[in-house]
Image (tube, rainbow, N blue to C red; front, side, top):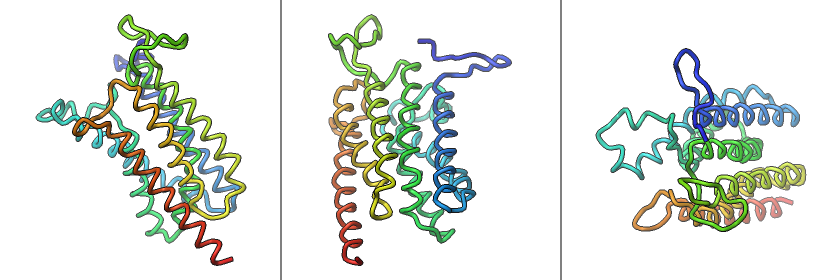
Length: 245
């Protein structure tokens, strides 16, 4: 696929950027609508987005560059050039959640309730953003004989970007159904982290462009940590809720 969608005054507009921008705008809109429907001041969601979105982009890039340092070292222009890809979702999530935590503490609003508002939008945004990888010809798997394989360099390979996109859409649907049944703040966000990490662990094993550390796939290690940590947190917050009852 051609990674360039069109040009404006000689400047190439890439599909990658279009999908990422669409994901961000849709995500902010959905969080705004959710907060408003629950009777909260939706302007907080805009304020939070103005801090968290830039932080997420910086975090996504830094995370990727750190684990690909041999390629980027000594070339500042390579480091700041995100037009050709090179953003890691785990870096984005770490930076955005940390920034969101600070924002909620400064504004004296509930952190867990706000990340519950955001969780469905985040995973839907991830589902949309993965299609940018398709147009960049990245985030695919190894060779396959399956009929839905895509052709890369003349070889049929696993469309792992598609697997993750579909998995994330499934999580989005589940969270949208479950959010009205939650018993405690933080439950939706923690379920998002667990479910996303389960799918990511499996899908990452099929990819050929994984970030590596000491021979291990970093995304799989992070996924295991999130599944374990978020499961423990979910048990803790649910037990505290039951104790108060």
